[in-house]
Length: 211
Figure 1 (tube, rainbow, N blue to C red):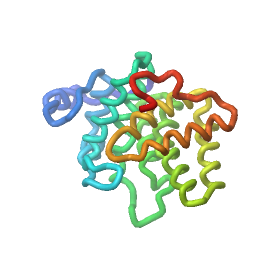
Figure 2 (cartoon, one colour):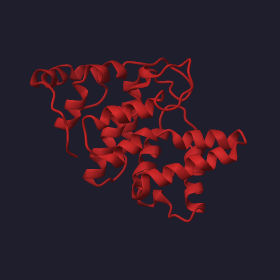
Figure 3 (cartoon, helix red, strand yellow):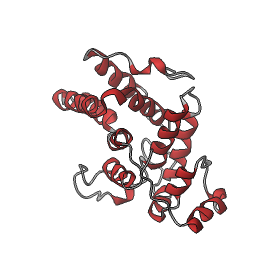
Figure 4 (tube, rainbow, N blue to C red):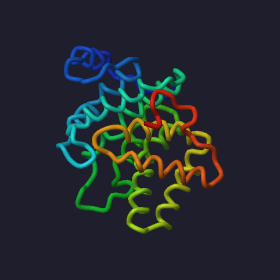
Protein backbone atom coordinates (compact mmCIF):
# COMPACT_ATOMS: atom_id res chain seq x y z
CA UNK A 1 0.00 0.00 0.00
CA UNK A 2 1.18 3.46 -0.78
CA UNK A 3 -0.04 7.01 -0.46
CA UNK A 4 -0.05 7.18 3.32
CA UNK A 5 0.10 10.65 4.80
CA UNK A 6 2.45 10.35 7.81
CA UNK A 7 1.27 11.99 11.03
CA UNK A 8 3.50 14.08 13.23
CA UNK A 9 6.11 11.94 14.96
CA UNK A 10 4.76 13.06 18.36
CA UNK A 11 1.34 11.63 17.48
CA UNK A 12 2.86 8.23 16.76
CA UNK A 13 4.70 8.43 20.08
CA UNK A 14 1.36 9.12 21.77
CA UNK A 15 -0.11 5.94 20.27
CA UNK A 16 2.75 3.89 21.65
CA UNK A 17 2.55 5.56 25.03
CA UNK A 18 -1.20 4.93 25.25
CA UNK A 19 -0.89 1.26 24.25
CA UNK A 20 -2.46 0.26 27.57
CA UNK A 21 -5.74 1.85 26.36
CA UNK A 22 -6.15 -0.61 23.48
CA UNK A 23 -7.29 -4.24 23.74
CA UNK A 24 -5.04 -5.10 20.78
CA UNK A 25 -1.53 -4.38 19.57
CA UNK A 26 -0.54 -2.15 16.66
CA UNK A 27 1.88 -4.19 14.59
CA UNK A 28 3.12 -1.79 11.89
CA UNK A 29 4.01 1.84 11.28
CA UNK A 30 0.93 2.13 9.07
CA UNK A 31 -1.37 0.92 11.83
CA UNK A 32 0.20 3.38 14.26
CA UNK A 33 -0.13 6.19 11.75
CA UNK A 34 -3.84 5.53 11.28
CA UNK A 35 -4.35 5.25 15.03
CA UNK A 36 -2.72 8.64 15.59
CA UNK A 37 -5.79 10.31 14.09
CA UNK A 38 -7.96 11.91 16.79
CA UNK A 39 -11.25 11.07 15.10
CA UNK A 40 -10.21 7.43 14.70
CA UNK A 41 -9.31 7.27 18.38
CA UNK A 42 -12.64 8.81 19.42
CA UNK A 43 -14.50 6.47 17.07
CA UNK A 44 -13.07 3.39 18.76
CA UNK A 45 -14.71 4.50 22.01
CA UNK A 46 -18.16 4.88 20.42
CA UNK A 47 -20.93 2.41 21.16
CA UNK A 48 -23.00 0.83 23.92
CA UNK A 49 -23.92 -2.87 24.14
CA UNK A 50 -26.56 -3.61 21.48
CA UNK A 51 -27.82 -6.34 19.19
CA UNK A 52 -24.95 -7.82 17.20
CA UNK A 53 -22.46 -5.94 19.39
CA UNK A 54 -22.90 -6.91 23.04
CA UNK A 55 -19.27 -5.86 23.57
CA UNK A 56 -20.21 -2.17 23.36
CA UNK A 57 -17.40 0.14 22.26
CA UNK A 58 -15.98 -0.32 18.77
CA UNK A 59 -12.48 -1.01 20.10
CA UNK A 60 -13.67 -4.29 21.65
CA UNK A 61 -15.19 -5.36 18.36
CA UNK A 62 -11.93 -4.54 16.56
CA UNK A 63 -10.12 -6.76 19.05
CA UNK A 64 -12.49 -9.66 18.28
CA UNK A 65 -12.08 -9.31 14.52
CA UNK A 66 -8.28 -9.14 14.81
CA UNK A 67 -8.29 -12.26 16.99
CA UNK A 68 -10.41 -14.06 14.39
CA UNK A 69 -7.97 -13.10 11.64
CA UNK A 70 -5.19 -14.61 13.75
CA UNK A 71 -7.03 -17.94 13.61
CA UNK A 72 -6.41 -18.08 9.86
CA UNK A 73 -3.25 -19.02 7.99
CA UNK A 74 -3.28 -15.96 5.76
CA UNK A 75 -0.58 -14.73 3.37
CA UNK A 76 1.25 -11.85 5.09
CA UNK A 77 0.09 -9.22 2.59
CA UNK A 78 -3.55 -10.26 2.92
CA UNK A 79 -3.28 -10.34 6.70
CA UNK A 80 -1.83 -6.82 6.77
CA UNK A 81 -4.62 -5.47 4.58
CA UNK A 82 -7.36 -7.21 6.54
CA UNK A 83 -5.96 -5.85 9.79
CA UNK A 84 -6.33 -2.35 8.36
CA UNK A 85 -9.92 -3.17 7.42
CA UNK A 86 -10.56 -4.36 10.97
CA UNK A 87 -9.16 -1.15 12.43
CA UNK A 88 -11.36 1.15 10.36
CA UNK A 89 -14.53 -0.67 9.23
CA UNK A 90 -16.79 0.31 12.16
CA UNK A 91 -14.83 3.22 13.56
CA UNK A 92 -16.83 6.00 11.91
CA UNK A 93 -20.30 5.09 13.11
CA UNK A 94 -20.33 8.33 15.09
CA UNK A 95 -20.47 10.23 11.78
CA UNK A 96 -23.83 8.68 10.89
CA UNK A 97 -27.03 10.70 11.38
CA UNK A 98 -29.27 8.05 12.91
CA UNK A 99 -32.39 10.11 12.23
CA UNK A 100 -31.79 9.93 8.45
CA UNK A 101 -31.74 6.99 6.01
CA UNK A 102 -28.50 5.03 6.29
CA UNK A 103 -27.27 5.17 2.75
CA UNK A 104 -24.12 6.78 1.31
CA UNK A 105 -22.82 9.22 2.30
CA UNK A 106 -24.74 8.72 5.57
CA UNK A 107 -23.40 5.18 6.10
CA UNK A 108 -20.51 4.13 8.31
CA UNK A 109 -18.78 1.84 5.79
CA UNK A 110 -18.82 4.61 3.18
CA UNK A 111 -17.41 7.08 5.70
CA UNK A 112 -14.69 4.65 6.77
CA UNK A 113 -13.69 3.97 3.15
CA UNK A 114 -13.53 7.69 2.37
CA UNK A 115 -11.34 8.29 5.43
CA UNK A 116 -9.07 5.38 4.49
CA UNK A 117 -8.76 6.54 0.86
CA UNK A 118 -7.26 9.81 2.06
CA UNK A 119 -4.44 7.89 3.75
CA UNK A 120 -3.86 4.65 1.82
CA UNK A 121 -3.95 3.85 -1.90
CA UNK A 122 -5.70 0.48 -2.16
CA UNK A 123 -9.01 0.68 -4.10
CA UNK A 124 -9.84 -2.97 -3.46
CA UNK A 125 -9.44 -2.56 0.29
CA UNK A 126 -11.48 0.66 0.19
CA UNK A 127 -14.32 -1.22 -1.57
CA UNK A 128 -14.13 -4.02 1.01
CA UNK A 129 -14.43 -1.51 3.86
CA UNK A 130 -17.25 0.39 2.18
CA UNK A 131 -19.30 -2.75 1.47
CA UNK A 132 -18.41 -4.84 4.52
CA UNK A 133 -22.01 -4.93 5.81
CA UNK A 134 -23.65 -5.65 2.46
CA UNK A 135 -23.71 -9.40 3.06
CA UNK A 136 -25.70 -8.81 6.26
CA UNK A 137 -28.02 -6.38 4.50
CA UNK A 138 -28.60 -8.82 1.66
CA UNK A 139 -29.39 -11.56 4.18
CA UNK A 140 -31.78 -9.24 6.06
CA UNK A 141 -33.57 -8.39 2.81
CA UNK A 142 -33.81 -12.11 2.02
CA UNK A 143 -35.38 -12.87 5.41
CA UNK A 144 -37.87 -10.04 4.88
CA UNK A 145 -38.89 -11.45 1.51
CA UNK A 146 -37.25 -8.66 -0.50
CA UNK A 147 -35.46 -11.07 -2.80
CA UNK A 148 -34.81 -8.58 -5.61
CA UNK A 149 -33.02 -6.29 -3.16
CA UNK A 150 -31.10 -9.20 -1.67
CA UNK A 151 -29.83 -10.38 -5.05
CA UNK A 152 -29.03 -6.83 -6.14
CA UNK A 153 -26.79 -6.38 -3.11
CA UNK A 154 -25.01 -9.70 -3.70
CA UNK A 155 -24.46 -8.83 -7.36
CA UNK A 156 -23.12 -5.39 -6.46
CA UNK A 157 -20.57 -6.85 -4.06
CA UNK A 158 -19.42 -9.35 -6.68
CA UNK A 159 -19.14 -6.56 -9.28
CA UNK A 160 -17.32 -4.10 -7.02
CA UNK A 161 -14.88 -6.60 -5.52
CA UNK A 162 -14.16 -8.70 -8.62
CA UNK A 163 -11.05 -10.78 -7.97
CA UNK A 164 -11.05 -9.48 -4.40
CA UNK A 165 -14.21 -11.37 -3.45
CA UNK A 166 -12.27 -14.05 -1.51
CA UNK A 167 -10.62 -11.31 0.57
CA UNK A 168 -14.06 -9.81 1.19
CA UNK A 169 -15.46 -13.16 2.36
CA UNK A 170 -12.45 -13.70 4.61
CA UNK A 171 -13.15 -10.39 6.31
CA UNK A 172 -16.87 -11.13 6.44
CA UNK A 173 -16.05 -14.39 8.25
CA UNK A 174 -13.83 -12.63 10.80
CA UNK A 175 -16.43 -9.90 11.35
CA UNK A 176 -19.35 -12.33 11.52
CA UNK A 177 -17.67 -14.56 14.15
CA UNK A 178 -17.91 -11.77 16.73
CA UNK A 179 -20.50 -10.51 19.17
CA UNK A 180 -23.78 -12.40 18.85
CA UNK A 181 -24.09 -12.34 15.07
CA UNK A 182 -25.93 -15.10 13.23
CA UNK A 183 -23.39 -17.26 11.32
CA UNK A 184 -26.10 -18.37 8.88
CA UNK A 185 -25.87 -15.04 7.09
CA UNK A 186 -22.36 -15.78 5.82
CA UNK A 187 -23.34 -19.27 4.66
CA UNK A 188 -26.32 -17.83 2.76
CA UNK A 189 -24.21 -15.08 1.19
CA UNK A 190 -21.55 -17.52 -0.04
CA UNK A 191 -24.26 -19.81 -1.39
CA UNK A 192 -25.61 -16.92 -3.47
CA UNK A 193 -22.13 -16.23 -4.84
CA UNK A 194 -21.60 -19.84 -5.85
CA UNK A 195 -25.08 -20.11 -7.40
CA UNK A 196 -23.99 -17.29 -9.70
CA UNK A 197 -21.23 -19.57 -10.99
CA UNK A 198 -18.28 -18.69 -8.80
CA UNK A 199 -16.10 -20.88 -6.64
CA UNK A 200 -16.67 -21.01 -2.90
CA UNK A 201 -14.44 -18.13 -1.66
CA UNK A 202 -14.00 -19.87 1.70
CA UNK A 203 -11.98 -22.74 0.26
CA UNK A 204 -8.66 -21.00 0.95
CA UNK A 205 -9.51 -20.35 4.60
CA UNK A 206 -8.17 -22.41 7.47
CA UNK A 207 -8.45 -22.31 11.23
CA UNK A 208 -12.16 -23.01 11.55
CA UNK A 209 -13.72 -20.90 8.78
CA UNK A 210 -16.69 -23.23 8.54
CA UNK A 211 -17.22 -23.72 12.27
